[in-house]
Each structure stands twice: as structure tokens, then as C-alpha cells.
Image 1 (cartoon, rainbow, N blue to C red):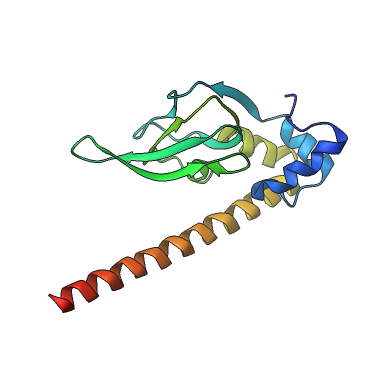
Image 2 (image 1 turned 90 degrees about the vertical axis):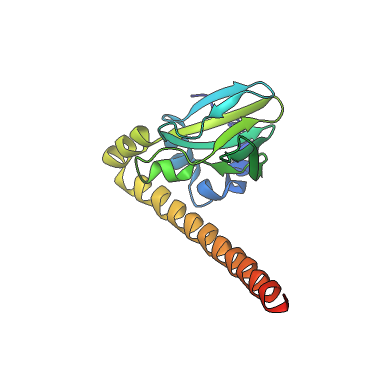
Length: 165
């Protein structure tokens, strides 16, 4: 695929995307062979809660809202993703269904890395595959730590309200 920021002076911008930060220019070019790009219009769904998870998505231009549908049909916004940020990463690690819906907020260009392509890349270029998976695991671990801290804060607030009642 023709990568955004492919020109020599722009390749450094890939280093701004945490998942690709440790990759060399040559590795980015190899990865580019398995990436898929797509543009979504404002309000268009990237993926739906409950659908099979097939890959990770990187926002190149625009923004995406990740939200979860509640039992009463309302939506809880979980995150807003802007250029350079990625979402849907758990699909690279397992075959589970999506736990949220992702919707383009405005006209948005996205690059996708599908699980099947990552696995094929890891077979043909094992070192590159390991580098990507190690970086992904570090990012997922940090996101889990942040979630644990936030959960602890909420629990402490709930306990203090309970004790004050």
C-alpha cells in the first residue's frame, strides 16, 4: 500500500505512532505491505459492538469515537481517538468479539492492521512480527495499568461516599 507520510522527510512521523515507534524505515516499509487504508465519512461505523474483532486501526486523519452501548440503548463514550492513536488492538491478540463500537466523528482516514496479516508477517519476518507484538503488549499493559488506577480511584470515591452516608 502507499503509506501516508511515505516521503523521506515524512517517515519520521511514523515514529510518533507508539505502535511503530521502534521500527526502522525498512521495517515500516515491510509493514506497509500488509496495511490497509480506508476513509470513513462523519458518522460512519468503523466496527460495531459484538462483531468479530479482526484487527487494529490507526487514525491517520480525522477522529474516531469509541463507545459502548448500554442496556437501555444509550452510549457511553470510552475514548476519542485522534491522528496517531490506535484502537481495536485486542483483536490482534485474540479472536473475541468487539466490546465497543467505533464511529468516525468527521471525515477520517484509517490504516488497519488485520490479525491474519500480522500472523503472516510474523511467519515471513519473525523479528519484525516479534517487535510489533512486544510494542503492542507494552502499550496494552500500560493501558491496563491506567485502567486499574482509574478503577481504584472510583472505588476509593465510592467507599468515601458510602462511609460519609
